[in-house]
Length: 270
Image (tube, rainbow, N blue to C red; front, side, top):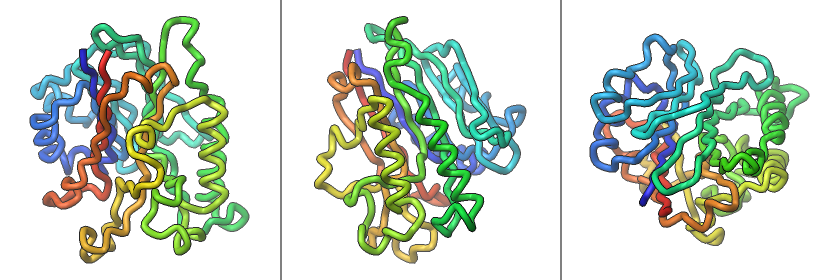
């Protein structure tokens, strides 16, 4: 049986619900993970998702900022939400999903702080927050629940492009937040400490350019192609052998009133 999962920073779920609906009708992932929903829980458009066949949801939202959600055609169990750095921000939600013929999977959905403009924690509290958030994420381990028969997937907008080929110009972005050495080294250490497998780079060789985000400031984003890979899909090692494809839906950046991020879908075969 196949199992598919999409991660997408939607930059306001209510504003872009028509785009989400169109995507779900066409691509029909089993699970959709959204970030930056910018929507309190009581205003989340659950009815629209249910009409599309996504009857199960784990949401963690707040008014106007942040917000994460897991929408699923399969039942969700054991939901949890963690307040990273104790700021009261809605940046994490997790739940367990059980694909047919597959293992139970603990699915973590993250929206990591962007970090502001200046990559110096001494003068930029937003950058300090980002580094502290990542430090707390290091407690997550992909094998944490394997004794209970539960595998792990971590997805979301991690707001870091770790590889040189994850940005349009490694040299020009070394002092730009999202690709500074302290960020990339921290993310790589987090991944290694937690034994996480970068599924996108498992499928697309690290030598190839791979982007999921293009700035709104770009006058012609498609021609200049100044992108970054800020969106990620990681898993415990046991799931990596079941990966069949990764699709970055680049065309979504050109839709009417789009998010600056595009959907990324992983497909597995169990």
